[in-house]
Image 1 (cartoon, one colour):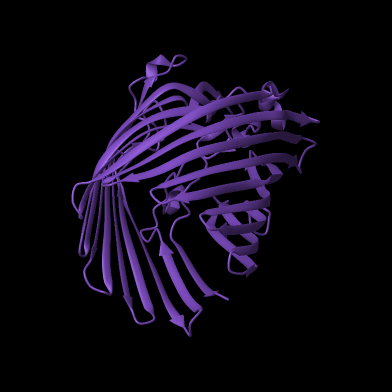
Image 2 (cartoon, one colour; image 1 turned 90 degrees about the horizontal axis):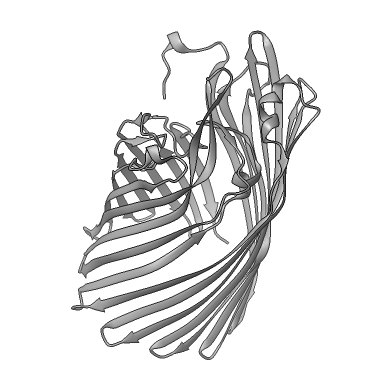
Length: 467
């Protein structure tokens, strides 16, 4: 978002973004089995728009290593797959700021590790498919905010274990297709702490939040059933009744610190959220035209969302937020999707969504009941055009977002806006592709979520080769 020169500070500088990604993949395949290994390395540097003494100013990095081993096997009507994975993300952030000629430099280093196993199997009996899946995942965080201009070190630690088992039955009887599923989930948080070593005035406002954090466990059963009926070869009706379950993140449970909307404090007592969903719709597909219309109604309980605590720091300049459980949220909406293949080279996809997400009940803050959830526009429209000819492909996109709010009190609106982008690529030989993409063409800066601002206009040039 361009800022007039009259409002710029001497420390303001341009935002920038640099990244590098490397992916290596190898494997072995025979008649019934496939073994595959993947390794990905990602390195980036993102300027935050402030520069005082550091060469690049305030910056963030998400240096990531990811690897997995995947094995697939099939025998007659039975197939199964197992994946073992490990990921290490080294999140780094250098923050420099100056107030009343006092310079502060903070070096943030947070190591996040995720590892586990995923396995699933499927048995095909003509009109019936039986399947199961199991996963066991553990995440760990070891975060340190080291103040280079004072003695303070802010630490946050914790681990999170998630395990899921699902059983599913797919059945087809004439024009009817049904899917019944049940999911068992287990969740455990432990080893959490938020503490400050050698505190000074620079971190005094955080001292009230330091603690050894409470451990917690939870268990949930989530059933789901769906049915589809084919009225004709071109038209079908469907209905879904489902329940869902989502656990908190380690960041929400253990870390207190600054986000774009203000200062947020950890909540180790945050509970997993559950949701009941009812959806129905109609699908039409004939020749080169596809249309899908659906309506949905959802009830979320213990819905996790950032809530203003009523407190401020720095003389009222920064609001204090906390991820809390909203007692009940109701969401209803309509979605219309369309796709038309005009010819062999040109296709257009469109989407219109009306989504009303309101706080229906909040025991601890009843005055915001009836308000819209933040970052939830009522209306969105998206248009994607794809043109392919020979070795060239071009894909422009256009999106419209209705007015939305950045706070649960619905007092800070983000005006409606249009976002546009374009991707283009050309193939050389069989496996080599040169591509360019430009996003946020209008260079508008807006909140993507409470953590993240859009990075403005962003262009990317790349070369891709498939072995």
